[in-house]
Image 1 (cartoon, rainbow, N blue to C red):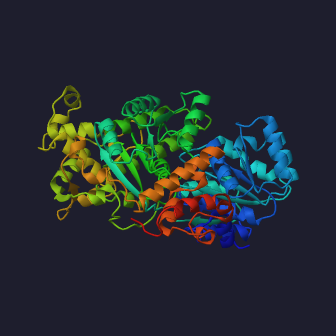
Image 2 (cartoon, one colour; image 1 turned 180 degrees about the vertical axis):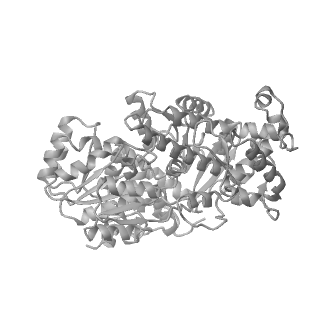
Length: 612
């Protein structure tokens, strides 16, 4: 059976997404591969299809229990034998799962990296035909990545223990060139085919609001969404998680929480409540969500700025995984930056590394922080900023982010920019933004007098407010005229483009709009609900009710039965028989046999093919 026919039979899709077919072809040609695809782009299909076409058991190394459970559930529902091995199972359950795999009952076995070198798993692996080892979230093996996990270093040793070297395929959502090279080297990939699919997720609508009252902004955002909308709110600290969850609970939302300060049982229960739609909103730290394959998440809110663009895009990408429109909102204040700088300096995660390496990783983390600060402050297209960070060349206007939907004026800031750059130079690049702004404004406090800064020609040279000057400074940083030093208390330095700004014919412009101080002044584009396809609501609601009933009876997450995108396609096509049901996107043969009749009965209760 061809890859395309396998896709249709088991997963119900007629065609592959960008990059999937190339990776599958590479694997089937017995080549190692490295696939870099954004969250929600369908990485799992790239190794699941080959696994179905290969002889033997494919091993999938995966970092989190939730990821394994979700994918194994989905595979079993599609009629594919699969199991997982991790700490949630007893020794007896692990023994039984490995016995079943050895007897050919499973095509894929998901395993935590910590389990690879255990005696029981090694015995199974050395006695079983393993055509491929898959490394999911492969950036975890790189100390230069945004989520380094030492346990991933065991993977090459495991592969070396096998009687015959299998194909090694590695997949990640975000990886800079340095991390890509590190993955290839650390996993000892053999002349791999490297495929980087487009990072764009066109179904996601991005908004970033620089605002003081985050609680009001969050509530305003949620008011624009249906009450049954499913979403995640990410916070940077446990305290913030508890506070935000308390506010949303008191506002009547079905909300849970997840962070490392909770007990294991409480965290597990909270996660299951979210997966099984018993709660609609999860408030969590970034400990929650890696590998969560929940297709009906329609929004992700970042209550605090993440540590870097890689983390932001991966977390935001948990919205709209089924391809339907979804919203991604980030709420930003300067305090977020200070918190992250503190974490970078104080983290003990790198305590096993040598001093030089630790310092280099810190510098890289500070550079990443500077990039996401630029994203939060830019008035240019948000999608374009993100895609350029990942090396793409997007159009200037995407038409599907808050900045592209807002109205800006183009202001000439050349004179003020030259004043700022000159001030940084005269202050010998020894101070941060706050001090530079105070000198420009002529603030004569004790600290400024002690450093003799009142004697500078740029002291008191600007008539602008601190807010406006800070905005221009950040704009100059984003354009390379200035930069921040790589340390906790970052100093303002001259950037690579500063000389061009000081020339006589220089012209520097910046998009401007009125300051956002309350949610009432925030443009509607920042809260806009992503436009979803219009279908017959009565039919859609009836199909959702049936899906929930089936999921409850079978103790499955609802999206594992059918995704929202599949229900939308049913509403559009209104199939009248099983043959037509098989044309619906996401309905494969096994699911059609299991559920097709029940869904047809619901559809046939409605009057035909009208989509009102």
